[in-house]
Image (cartoon, rainbow, N blue to C red; front, side, top):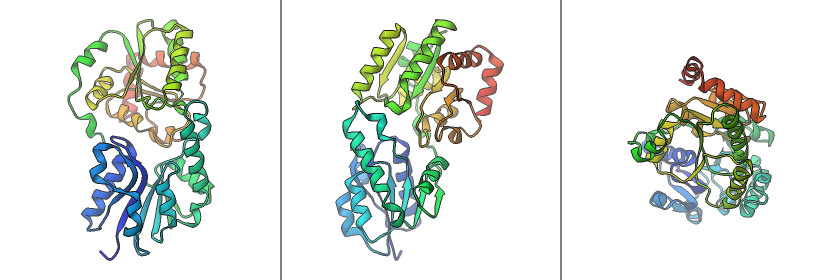
Length: 332
């Protein structure tokens, strides 16, 4: 090929939606005959062999090349990419508003603010700007990007095709109701709302229920401590923070879950919603940001965040087999 198509991003994570997309794009490009490398500032150790240091991008740069820039946070990689002569396609994965992280993660507040500032300069730099959801595309349009489009996330469920951890499943596979949420323990996902909803549900509807909160809290130990203090203040038993889990453990949690409950108020896409669909777990989610579009008519959305309202909604689904099956059927 007469030109190359490279990708650049701040961080390549293992097992997350952006990582799957970046590696998938490279596979397609190389299959089509393009030279295509992935340049990063940092990468999970398991993926380092697939990447190059972002500083090497300056020697690979050519005016005729195309650079696909995955943007979700301020970074040195972003600033170098901006200064290069390559034609650019921006793929926007959303910047979480930094106010969510005040008092719990000072560095992330700074990086999100930097990302927002950097984004303001990009409309004049890009030949095309793509959001990975319609919500993100609309944000791009509001910032002055043109033309814009949607590059949909294509979920990769291969990590859910292993054998589940049977020992873990046995701990929770009983006649209790297991309410599940999967996601990093960060403030925009509103774990405190999940806890308050569960507290009402357990007290008013079903004492034989547990809340399974599956996700890493690394870097957010202060937020985790706040949540644990809330659980203690409410005196709500059977709330489990699992931390990071393996694929086999994640499968086990999905298999024993009776309902997936999401209270997040800021999502650029939210892949775990589709994981729950795939695993035949009925989903109840707060109708905010990209969540309604991701669910695309499946599951159940709510707009009234009062814990009593959501707890009653959860009970209406879990306690009625016909309703339960209808919700799962809507997710096909």
